[in-house]
Image 1 (cartoon, rainbow, N blue to C red):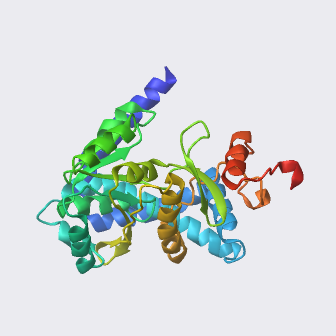
Image 2 (image 1 turned 120 degrees about the vertical axis):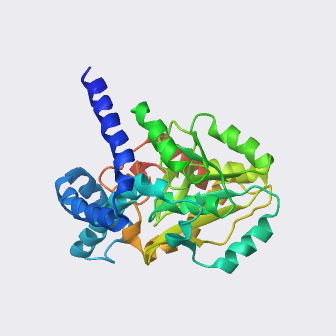
Length: 328
């Protein structure tokens, strides 16, 4: 009963925010987001601890403890701003989107259109900057399609976020049977979009990729789709710019049919990691990216990373080594 009441209150509160937030000036909302996120960083001890541990694992001694705290705090503030801007997104339309969103390289965008032709494309991004608004630009510039989102535990909220993410013309689908649905859509020439840095449980289909020298069990959906549909993957990131955001299109990725999904997923990540290293405060550090501790150099992993026999088996199968924790 308590859970039902809490879920109902969450729905009422967010439904009100969806209606009210677009009435406020965007500059005011950004100021509010940064002001509120500052104390949230210090009060939410769990998220702060995860973010600081991730930064230490990824960068080692590159940053001092004070610099890691600054990066983690800004990362939380980026999340707060992105959340309020998502609620404000119904104010953006075909007539005014250029005041808030633009391609970092307009000519490169036209090159991508020529390369794409009549084929569908797999748009891929990560939890970096305001990826929500970056997706909007694709639809406003004629590359609309379908994007996947995870169904929320409080399912009442799923419809609210679907509505917000469809303001530009995209269609949102939940993760149930999304692989098959996206494959059919790509074969019909439609575009699809998804996030490439979602970590999974070992019970879920995934793939091992190396990120910041640490092994992550992550989504393989984009790798399988590219392998089977034979369409290009278009990585992109959304970075803050004057009054809005620049959407940076990275080099598209195409493989021959004999490439493995693991090779495709790793290549995609290798496009993103240099960008994250350049602007680390824009990535979501408070997320448990490394759920499992590798059987090699396991002491490098964050405190929350667990040992897993299934993870070890995948690691050993990948590298053909009879590695065990007792040998390390």
